[in-house]
Length: 52
Image 1 (cartoon, rainbow, N blue to C red):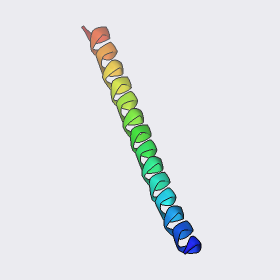
Image 2: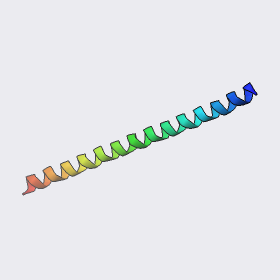
Image 3: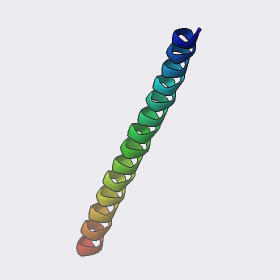
Image 4: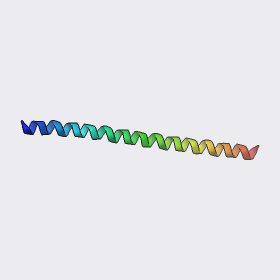
């Protein structure tokens, strides 16, 4: 019984950490994407400003 409980507990913990890690990578990816997008817009804006 104890062994069974431990296994289910381990499973829950693993699922929890998997979820956390996936969330973390998702946020990281979105953050990088936004930074990249912002830089590109900034560069284009500056270039347009120079051309004007």
